[in-house]
Amino acid sequence: MGAIDADAVEAALLAHKDEFRLCYEREINAETPSLSGRVSTSFVIGGSGRVTQSGIESTTLKNANVERCLLTVIKRIDFPVPRGGGIVQVTYPFKFSAVGK
Image (cartoon, rainbow, N blue to C red; front, side, top):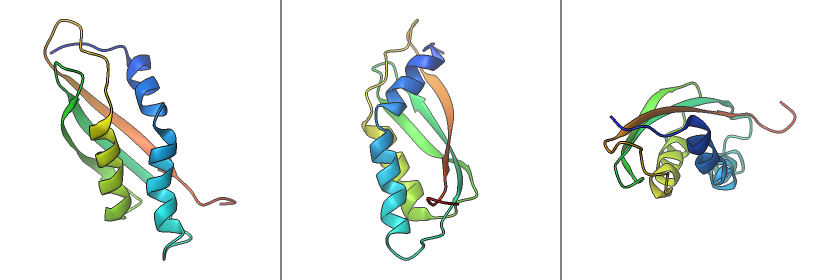
């Protein structure tokens, strides 16, 4: 197993926060305006800093379109290269709520 500073992983994810938000907003603007909940993602960062595996750990959002979109964005992110080689397993939660909720 390699290692990446948790703050560096979060910074890489936060750099794409608008894309994550768009995944959600497309659905609330479509047919589910009251959609809210939490999605816990799990992914593996390979030795190159690219995601090699990703999935949904748990969800209260229960919206396949949002969940699939989140994973697509995660797979596009260039994370820092793990120190010591190897891979890094990450679990990261997303929480979404409609404006005013």
